[in-house]
Amino acid sequence: MTAAVPISLHVNGERVEAHVLPRLNLADFLREHLKLTGTHVGCEHGVCGACTVRVNGEIVRSCLMLAVQTQNASVETIEGLSDSGEIADLQAAFRDRNALQCGFCTPGMLMAAQDLLKLEAEPDRDRIREHLSGNYCRCTGYQAIVDAIEATARARAGRAP
Amino acid sequence: MKASAFAYARATSVVNALELLAAHGDKARILSGGQSLMPAMNLRLISPELIVDIGELAELRGIAVKGDILTIGALTRHVELLKSPEIAAHAPLLADAIAHVAHPAIRNRGTIGGSLAHADPASELPACVVALGATIIVRGPRDERRVAAKEFFTGIYETALSPQELLVAIELPVARKDSSHFFHEFARRHGDYAIVGLASQALIRADRFTELRLGFFAVGDRPLLAEAAGKLVNVTVTPAVLSEASSALGEELDPQEDQQASPAMRRHLAKVLLVRCVSTLLSRSDLAGAIA
Image (cartoon, rainbow over all chains, first blue to last red; front, side, top):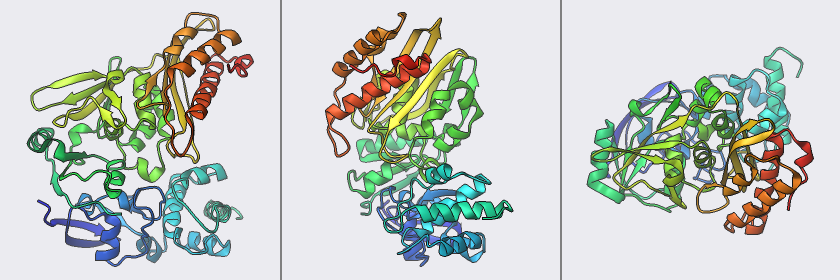
């Protein structure tokens, strides 16, 4: 029974059929099998947030989910959010405010930030920090990231950033 | 690291899951939300031979209120508890606590049954169910049994569950309209495991506790229902009374040492939480300085 298991799911809107070993996690499936390397693998035990993706519209840790658990699911990665233009303004705000240096944490940060902005129109800085509490940045620090998200929220609400 | 190889079975019903457990015993592990199991497997702390995925068993999901009993299916996710009007109305302590359980991406997958069955002594929900006097519903190969939350947790990552049993639901008494609660934890980062935490439920009449349940976590090998609470019930709480209860609490605790804190620091923080809890619940700012 350790043999490969067939799965069928949607990734960034495209139907994907694959055979995967049970031990393969979703992050490695996306990176190694589908070559979607925007999803980063950091700690592999759910602490750093670099591997954050959306499954059925909700953010999850792709290192803490098996590929076999995505049977019939809809998975969205940073490539999907980026290509569709959904987070173009958020990405521009990160760039404008130098909210990244090495960029390793950025895909996960953008995923978590967009999740918050979809749930709440104008979160304050404390709410932003709380929602990003599961995402580590080890070089820039969080000030500029919070700035970028706050500015995006204001712009989306039709107010001056 | 990556998990070692294992076989995978997607359970089609509770009965099917129990059959798989009966056949494989302690070589199998149940996968619900996976937010504790997967880290343990990725770190190779455990290497089960078979994973029984119960994620699609709709019969284990949901929140229902019947009379004065609130029933929560084992597969109910943290995010669902957080958003539930039934939980907010009938188990407000749980609603407060859930906001401290890990981070949004983890709350979207983690389940209450998984958290209780995992029994991490530093996690919030075991202490909550102990403080709330919950009953854990467990199904085995032949029958169902009911275990008082206080008896359910038996050690670090240890519970009263046998390898053939499945935690299927949690029953809580609906909180009385006149009850009050307090939840607080000390952690390095919001959402991290607590250094020390307290989940408390109380009844107050004429400025006195008529009932007080103090569920401490991260102070020992399992959640602790503090007996020191007895010193604060049916008495007028003065700084001296609270100080005595605080000393009694210190003697009752057996905190462990780890990278986060020494036993002495944990004992001190537990006393700080006790004083904050009592002064907050009784609205008595004069008690806020009473630490023995």
